[in-house]
Image (cartoon, rainbow, N blue to C red; front, side, top):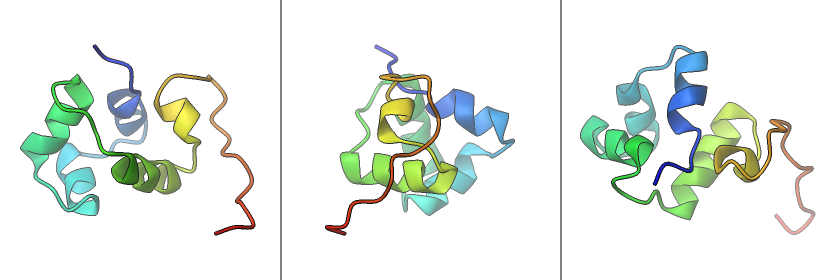
Amino acid sequence: MKTLRLKEIREDRDIAQKELAALLHTTQQQYSKYETGIYVIPLERLCILADFYGVSLDYLVCRTDERKPYPKSKLD
């Protein structure tokens, strides 16, 4: 089940899977499995990607088409 925009947003920005795998401290093969939905990407890695792309988690998981991230919490 493909419910993430990982491939779409990566290709829009001309970034290689290998680059994002390095950002997430994983392999290109593992990252590829996240994109295809073979493996579920951990929440902490989704947060890293949302920050990297400057989008909300809801956008990455297709809960909204609005890319703009929410304001940061004062609890951080």
